[in-house]
Amino acid sequence: MNSKQQIVDALVHVLPATMTPEQIEIKIERPKDSDNGDYAFPTFFLAKELHKAPQMIAQELLPQIDQSNFEKVVVAGPYINFFLDKVQVGAAILGEVLADPKNYGSSDLGHGGNVPIDMSSPNIAKPMSMGHLRSTVIGNSLANILSKVNYNPIKINHLGDWGTQFGKLMAAYKMWGSEEEVKADPINTLQKYYVRFHQEDKGNPALDDDARAWFKKLEDGDEEATHLWEWFRSESLKLFMKIYDVLGIEFDSFNGEAFYNDKMDEVVQMLEDKHLLQESKGAEIVDLEKYDLNPALIKKTDGATLYITRDLAAAIYRQRTYNFVQSLYVVGNEQQNHFKQLKAVLKEMGFDWSDNIHHVPFGLITQGGRKLSTREGRIILLENVLNDAIDLARKQIDEKNPDLPQADEVAKSVGVGAVVFHDLKNERLNNFDFDLAEVVRFEGETGPYVQYAHARAESILRKASQPDLSNVDKSISDPNAWEVVKALGQYQDIIQRAAREYEPSVVAKYAIQLAKDFNQYYAHSKILVEDDEKMARLALVQAVSDVLKSALALLGVKAPDEM
Ligand code: ARG
Image (cartoon, rainbow, N blue to C red):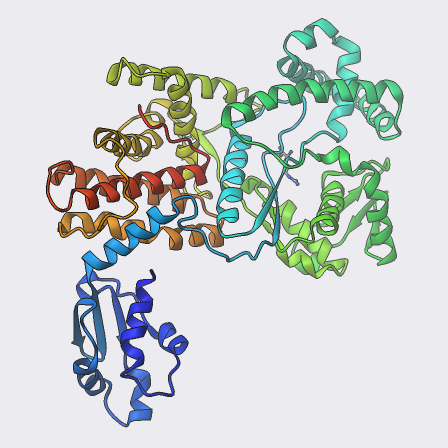
């Protein structure tokens, strides 16, 4: 039940008949300070019509309002303040959660509209970095959140599987490579060749020419070049898939940059037809001065296409294929400019749907306050991070609960969940520090803390032998329960806010708060004592378990029943 509706019902009979329930509803406010009630109705706007001072109107309306459904209704100056009947509202909220736990919190903001989400998108022949982890988990969580408000997300892994770097890689492989070496440890070996190429390349233009020639061969469909490319790609993809598997994340499409290879001529043609292409030192550019942006480089002097050319083709392809209502790109903040250029070029091409393209940027992960960079070799390999997190979780579980069944499985959910949760609880644009011991702690604002609150709720329900709660009276008079119930009632609003702001941290912070509220309640009130309200309390515990599990699922984090 919607408690705002209760206020509307109480007011509609006492206000002038010219006011519809909808008009009343928009006027209702939520006071910042709970001393002023749960909802407030201001009377200013009636002054003109009623020829009276607002304070007076409030005073006169008060005695006419049916107060039986509220704890109290009071007048404060020009406001009528409503205090909800906590017991009644609480019972209604618990009833709503338990009636359909899977769908609790859902709504229909999106009307089923398609939303492609460009996410993860690591580069072939390079290790997947912590930045790609951020894109993967933020994108996945946004997909879950958007689908909960009834959008249809399409998760696209725009693999970096094309570009001049493949020319360099092939040139390097042909010079120093060995098949066995690559097979034994594909990404590290390829990475090594690439780094060596860059070292030897300094002051040796012949190497660059060689690389350019190899990329040209690839773009022209040369057999050897294509074969090498396919091999590098499939070896890399195998390793990426392992990581996605550990994270439990699936994609709807792996159409990466190479997929747009045969779709770029059309883009270049369109740009030409619209007279948007200009020549600049032999290269083809689109001038974006009126957007205060640098020109977009569409074709290099040697005719090779670029990152943005492929992104133009991809944007157009996605519009045609999905007829999207929004198109998201979960990519690091450092590519801000690239996406501004992309939108600007599409706008210049006359595509108004470019307004529905949103870059969803995020900040950096630092370690000891320092930026992690691939170049310096200060790279943390994602796979190692996840494995270390699982080990650390396992140690803590063994201490707390040595007899836990399926401890391996639980350690995986807790370790991986901790890394994912830590990433998502930070507002995505903030940089944040990564300290594994901090991330996997069971206390504090961590994933394991929330998982532990859920497991505690499940353990209480097990002790009570999983009672059937569907028809029990869910009224709880204990005022300690109110904060928990109120938090449960906010779930739908929270999800909608997260969806509007593309901000999973809203859900993560909510999960922490709900877990805290529940732990506080548990510390102060005895749940399993035999009295009239025992079943109602168990209903509360069940509802907390359901909502924590659901919130964690929106983040892509599992909720073990025991840990
Ligand atoms: N592969 C790129 C990188 O690692 C990210 C691609 C993002 N998506 C896109 N459509 N540009 O930097």
